[in-house]
Length: 203
Image (cartoon, rainbow, N blue to C red):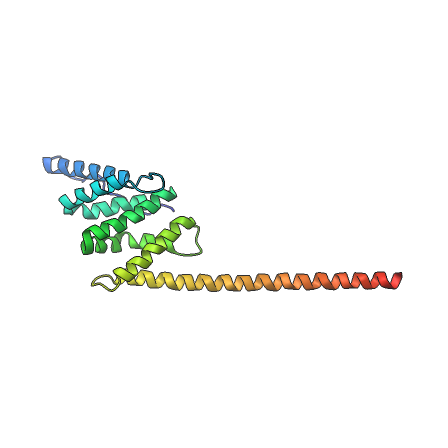
């Protein structure tokens, strides 16, 4: 799961050094720390206490929602499989908590990444791929029919097509393997029969 350009978590705002900028820097720093805490693996699951704290932080400062999604995206891209899975689940929690505003941000910022992780026949770890597939299907069913949710519906539809193509490819591959194995078995059988015939004539 390699890095992408142009989608790093928010950094220190450029510009002056006034109190407003300092306050923004502090908020972003606290936000990053809160996201890290919420996506740490605790026995294979996320930190529920930290997750609730993050939700309350964003609830008190709704303007942090876009930056929150960006911070979570950086954790979805983590090499640690558990962190990636927990981070995807956190997106689902945030969508449930903040509804349409969050789903629209996630659709444009995070859905393409999760859709790539969900694609079958890739090198994505199976546990990560399965969780991504679950979310793409869930969001497609629950958000795909809502206003502005066309992206979720499209992602679910694309995943279904990719799965059908992968299933077809596997069936073709299995058919070829069967033909090869069956041909080898028949050839071996004919060889054994010939050998018996030769031995019979020489006896």
